[in-house]
Amino acid sequence: MKNYTITVNGNVYDVTVEEAGSGSAPAARPAARPAAAPKAAPAPAAKPAGGAGSIEVKAGAAGKVFKLEASVGQAVKKGDAVVIIEAMKMEIPVVAPEDGTVASIDVAVGDAIESGAVLATLS
Image (tube, rainbow, N blue to C red; front, side, top):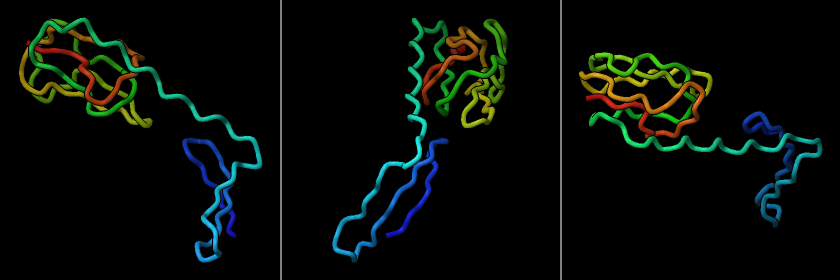
């Protein structure tokens, strides 16, 4: 048997593993010391009632809205940052897929978002 300490998302687990040739399946035992309960996934952001524009600006990763770089009515060029999301302690700009005018911003700073969520629309 071998003992390992494993950390998953900040939670520490002590596990004991048996060698496969010892005649029994590998065993994992719960931590002997108290470990924090895993956090529940954040609730997905509510779907917007429908953006005013036909070009959608979508999140490439799940995270939290960190900053709004553009405002409704602002002209943006392809590649300009519209929203910045924070994921895994990194700031990730979500950019305009093409030239246009911001028709709607469908999120607010602090909103939890899922990958592929529509953050804004352009017209």
